[in-house]
Image 1: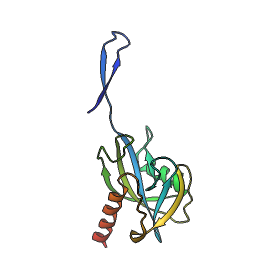
Image 2: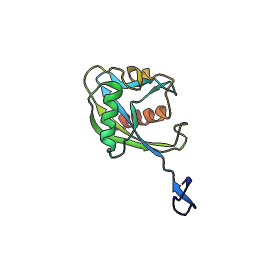
Image 3: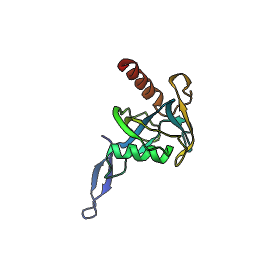
Image 4: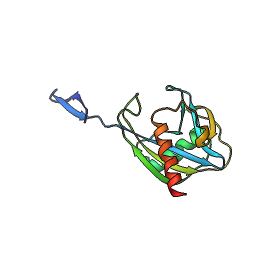
Length: 149
């Protein structure tokens, strides 16, 4: 684990402090006509699953529900956890570990918060410019669907 050094306020010696990865969640929101993706407002500007950082004191599930609402204006019901993705290179901004949830919702999504645009896509209509490792996540999701149906 990477460590950073800080000075002890009493003895002034270096103290090594672990630098853990950040926890995030991503949500695959199933609607009647497909799944919801957002076009990000901030770099990397690309299509992505709704999601974001888990707040201190917040469960992964609560973070997923909150992020879905913030970015798509949809109230979601979590169905299951898909997988946790931890490749240190999955997000070039920092080492982020994400847990992906599959959720359902009703209604029309509306872009909000970090999303400048929102769309509903099928496996056949997915955009090519997907952020982070979301192409792999969606490939895993569609593979799971094919296996379970």
